[in-house]
Length: 400
Image (cartoon, rainbow, N blue to C red; front, side):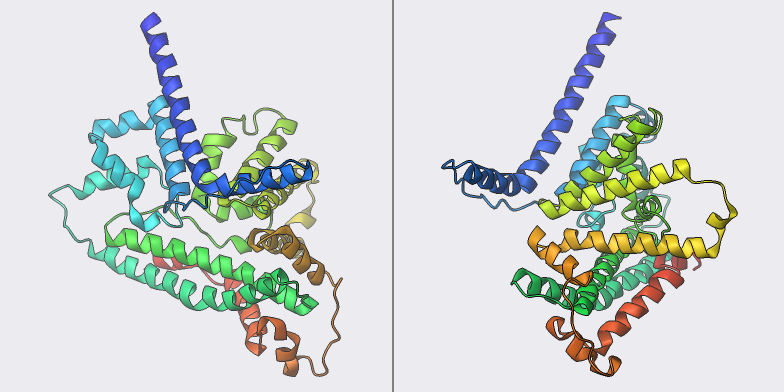
């Protein structure tokens, strides 16, 4: 009995050390400049003579994803639930673990894979009774990879031209008119959508080339009718990790309504910090955390009326959700808070512009500062139609 207690204590100690090591490693590479920059700023406000030079440490490729995958592996090793079942099927050695951590198709932009869905597939590849090349997987992989490449190269990069130009104008002290500001924010909203969707498709396609099925990580999130649904559709494996290894350990929704709101906010807030080092990411996380709490409170008090099942309510819910997401992306993209506030002020008409006569025929002058043309408005409208009305690539792949 005493030996078992000592073993549990040792295991808990190693778990804490392992998690701390991974988080400190990620923090050292990713957040050192941000922390030192704010420390220097704070010291100036207090008239202290601190000016620590920023080391500008290069972030290793995929470290954010590797950190979460290693933490999940450590926690499951401590629980011995999923690990023991894997060991019974196939011995796990260091090579298996290294392949799981560094499998390159998902290293750059995800998905965040779990060992129990990857290691059995690696073991199956060594089965001599199976063909070395899975031609059905190759065909499907080529299909989904091609769709992802098109999304990234043609669609996302086209929107990036207008988004980058708009944020560049704001960062250089320029003022956008209301149409340019909305075109800038919507261009980035669709840029990051097709960029991330394209990367997810390409990762799945590359995995299929090697006979590996990666988990779905993106499922038409702009169709969401509320912020909770958005997070179930956007970066799905990140949401899965945060739910299993943070939200549930904090108590989930089992600890009462007030603590449930706290847990939701913590998860969304930390998600924002995980995405990047900057106050924009912090505010983005706070906004989404607040929105998650408001939505949960709304579900507590919403009456059971048939109106909430009507098409009018769904359109209204989508409109509110989409515009909140578009608003929050401004902080995510902007170089600093000043640029973000400049864009938002212009979006809400604080900076006005006189409408040109024959509006559509003179869109080039209306969108002049972001190098926009008639194509800008056309692409934004077309993107809205595509993301709301069409099946995504993975849904089409299932029909092959």
